Image: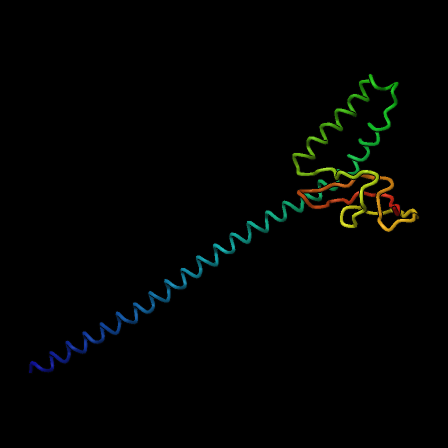
Length: 166
């Protein structure tokens, strides 16, 4: 009679071992799933942060680009200031506004391109609005019509220039 009890215990032990192995396999599967889910979430978080940063940067760039006509108007106003208005408070206010705008532009990463008459014409940096004939092969800037700007090292608005052959 002892043998049936031993077989019963052996069967119970085998069943328990089988159950333990099944549970360990489920645990390993769930652990793997949790690790993959954690990694997926971390990737999602990083991608979301990068997308938000790119959207913010595009928004800043659009705002900065919208400021350029105001900067151009202030440049024209201060460049053509008559000597008779040099001591006028209103004119001084316009000049101060232009200086404040320039400081703000630098803080935003907006830099005026350094373009001068006689510089070589560069299709990537300049926008030609007219070409003047000449005898040479090289193209140079004959006149700067509107300044160009770099935003964080990239051309935001090319300088508008007249080009001549030299």
